[in-house]
Image 1 (cartoon, rainbow, N blue to C red):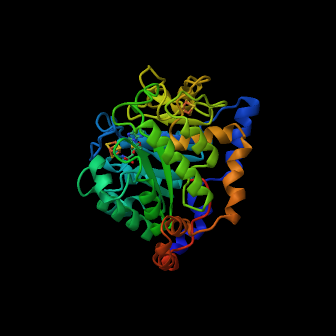
Image 2: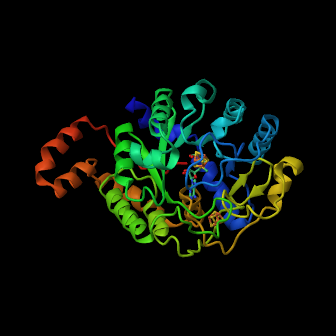
Image 3: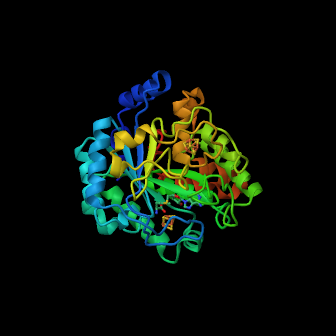
Length: 375
Ligand SMILES: C[S@@+](CC[C@H](N)C(=O)[O-])C[C@H]1O[C@@H](n2cnc3c(N)ncnc32)[C@H](O)[C@@H]1O
Ligand code: SF4
Ligand code: SF4
């Protein structure tokens, strides 16, 4: 199974040259183009997690979704991520994934993983699935409901068996803020990487940085500090170091110079509203990509200049890339010098007697996946 991860560059499906040219053209010439697009085909979900307010609501028709994909491909979009709600709960998800791939788009799916086994034949052409894992079984299920940890892991294994690149995504909330090491161990066992982000107040209002389900700030910052340290020791943390340092400032407003939202990124909701990214502008009237066509709607999309709420792990990396920030390379430059037995080292440090056990585990462990950014 591990051999599938040696081809991660190909599996992500993202053309680096087209991406770089598109970014430069937007930054230097002001020719904006939605290179990275989140489509939310549905806000319906099979779960109702304790920290999430985006799990019920409208659904896009498959026909409209297919038309959007054609228009995006014609505009030069590189990558589409299906998000939600739960995108695998959309009855047309197979047709959407297959259409996107036929059009040459890199396709990823952001999912709770539960429906992967049932949908696998229809979504097998997807390049990447990002599966939410919020801790070990008991903690994950506390936020997401009983039995859903095992279902999510089964989804990860089924996707891997079909050659889809899997990444884990952990949302750090009040109930799981210290469970990041368990998620990293699961990632290591699967031979994949994990992404981390804070649970903000609302997915529909980026200015709500915090709510009662959010993590305690001190515990959260200790966790981010630990993630930075663990990444430097070779743990499979997918966030870039510069992005982790940015996230560490949450919940204090933290402006992102050169936001890519509405310039090289866009998000399209189930009713066709087009936004700079998944989280900003949601409460306001927005141009409609289904009614007006994507190209026309994208001309009028909100282009934030003073957003200080970039707490989503995926948009954040794109903003730092858009800024041409050389610190994005830091992790990659470090990567040849990193050890791959990070948790064995930590276990040995914590308890010298643990060395034998930990060393035994290391022998079973597969090589860490490459340091490529999860798309
Ligand atoms: C809205 S979900 C949609 C995809 C899928 N249903 C899932 O759970 O992965 C996308 C991501 O948002 C995260 N999320 C949910 N509520 C959040 C919140 N209040 N703050 C930050 N992220 C949140 C989820 O954990 C997941 O990683
Ligand atoms: S986080 Fe995902 S799985 Fe959980 S309720 Fe929200 S949309 Fe559904
Ligand atoms: S800074 Fe980040 S969160 Fe804010 S609009 Fe830009 S991409 Fe979205």
